[in-house]
Image 1 (cartoon, rainbow, N blue to C red):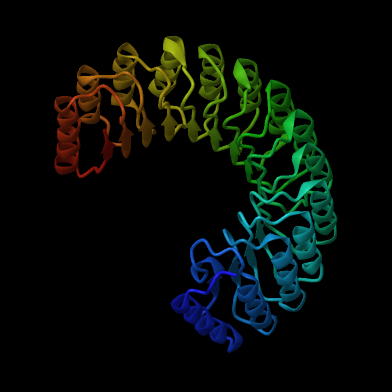
Image 2 (cartoon, helix red, strand yellow):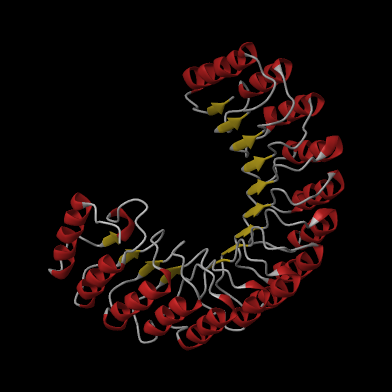
Length: 402
């Protein structure tokens, strides 16, 4: 067995005493702060923590993330939650916990009336864990008003879980789960009846345009969802067209993340056109897909009309010099956009000159990103000089990274 780091163990013992004594100044506890680096056997730490938490009435936020709990220590921790009725937020991120440990913790929360948020990303809880969670949710709807989840449950687990998504759920994260199109279908169906969900992350979940069809349908009727992350899914132009049509009917979505989703200029044009009649969407992230000249010019047209967009990210999107000049012209009259990302595009000093000239007329933009471009020190000096003049002549600050 590895030897305890003496200083860190002493610090841990001190904080355990504070927990036992219900120290009013200790509301937030992070176990990872007290475990020596690369320390694998944490059972002694967990045992002491369990004993202290059973009588504690002050800790409301408990973070066990990035600790090697594994199933055996997760089962030990479950003992604390059967008696503790104060903890409101529990984090179990990256704890190497499997199905048995997760089920033990969920069952221990059965009669808990304080828990409001549970974070458990990157733990392989499987179908059984998802089924246990589903059963917990159906019996605790009045307790849990927020649930953030990203365990590895797979397609079948998603089917179990989606049946019992509580109507009070505000945040759901299923990123990095291979739930696929069938899994997202049942999730999307449940969203049609959910009146509270505001934040949904589906980053890298093996969704294609088929799965987007189900999401688009729910977006057409859901008037609560404000944030949607679909990055790293191969939805292509067909999927983007489905989203574009849904957005014309949606008046709630404020942020849409579409990095690395395999679209081309065709899909971009559809989305940009749909945003001309939508004033709700404020933040759009479309980096790392080549949007083409026609796609870029569609966004130029959109910005020229002062759409509701406040953030537009087109990093590494193949935006060329001729489009940058057009963007600069649109920025000269735009009074809505606050953040513009052009990093990683083949733009040079002449493009920097056009952007610098636009900044002398645009007093709304708060950040401009142009890193990893073909801009020399001379071009960078033009942008930084425009930044200086804008701040000192008009009192309008702007962050420029180039």
